[in-house]
Length: 246
Image 1 (tube, rainbow, N blue to C red):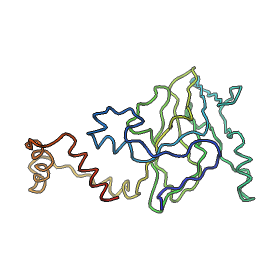
Image 2: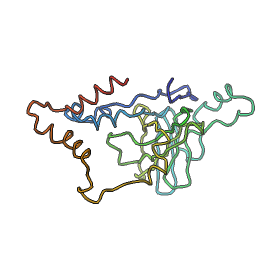
Image 3: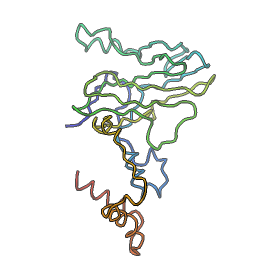
């Protein structure tokens, strides 16, 4: 059973896609082959798309938007995806009809727009969702994707993302053909305050014990002195371990 489940609430659009070790082909070939840390981070989670290409334009105060198939610009309010409300009401129980989420919404902050993927989602008990920009993919200079952690095992609802526009007086395209952000599942224990507030810093190397030095010897010294060691041995070891665990 998957720890994450998505429900398509808008018939259009692409399904979530497993994140890519090559970060959509932007990672250099040498890094893709040898840098397991980089490729593992890139592949952690899923890419999420908008169901339709939209354009946003911000003048520093107000934001206008339009979308693929539209013939005019509109001020951003709480705007529904075309036809989504009818589709939602046909499937929803009587008391939930009329509560279709908006596709594009203005937040309280100028230039910050909330966009809906057209998906609902939930996670297994104890798992949350980190929503963030795509890992290691070069970012646009026209907008920034905010990061957020949602306890999606307890809160079930539409999968939104907040985007901060940084360019003014020019249309900013958010294409449905390219992922907009990345979702990474997190065990809630991993960011519990009781763990994060227990940081320990050893004041000097004199604090390192026999086991610490042994681990350093195995990680750094031994590979350096091994004349038969091939580049990317760490990556090979990690991949073999993951294959055995899976």
